[in-house]
Length: 457
Image (cartoon, rainbow, N blue to C red; front, side, top):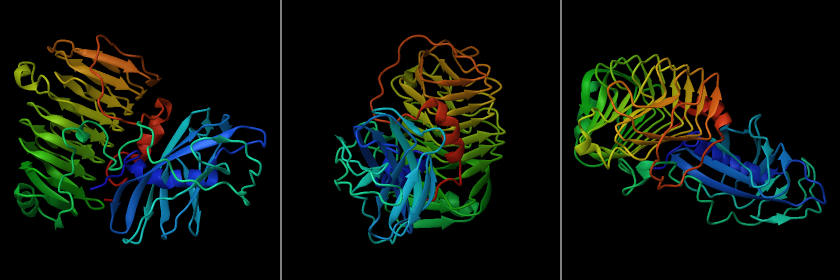
């Protein structure tokens, strides 16, 4: 299964935007004498009957530009319907994307990324073969343009293929980024036929069945307690899908994907990953008004990505490692990536970390968290990178309550009415490739893309 997001939703938007940027030409104001050039990475993050999500990253290789337009053409009837990180228009097969307010200035070797959703004919979805940035062909090198053209007459740029090897920072084509890409990757139910469930009994049976399965949740399902999720399952929410009163428990199983669901009023945890469960992806969900954790990961679990979720009207967001005396089981495990989540007034545990190293907390938006943002405890190693903190009095610190200190490295974060937090020690290196959004843009990126209902699955 392929997946969308602002980088995941952004993936679909990025593909259309990248194509658009290439065709339009990233360099918006290029003189006939200036060196100009660009490179585009285009990928399809996820695809479903009738639709797909695309990701595009355009890199300016020439002189700095203020404002850009990227253009490309589709040859199989694809139509872009929605974009984030760029504005988009389409006439026939010609797609044109332009910068938004926060990403219009591109220095030499500077990049901009965006994503989009689009429709396709279910038979063929070929990638665009050429892009222009500000009417300059994106060939992966620099040229001296002799006929830059005009917005209505783009000139005659040379058509050249998209580089076959995108920069290593570009997310993989699946749209999944982070620790869940490791240890063989996370595919959930893969291409298994989808089963739609509309009540608690059917959902319980489907989750607990053996074998690979894709489970679609429709409507509001009211339940209580924790529902066991077995290995090789993809759980997807149809539009408006809600699980009210209960949660999902991945215990000792592996290869599970949970996406596009609204959880509310749960009476234990909303999502609990425990007992050495591995390869779990929790993406584009909304959590509110529950009893305990929104997403708790513990007891030796590993290789988990938590991305593009929104937590609001709730106290305890995300716990990693359940107790201080469980180091024997947890040390060497609890490796989790938290990215592009919207911690929207959630009071604490955003996340609270024990033992895991490295834990990667990047490109999240923190708003008015009354307790604290991130806590690194019990010798954990946490990299806090490229996040946006707004009106947060305690952004990140070492130790929490009776838990001893961990290690924390912070870099490239953005602070609005919030102080830089407490750091110390070193953190193990991140083993996977990822694309980091500029911290100052994270608020707009995350609020546009995080939570249920922001993607089509």
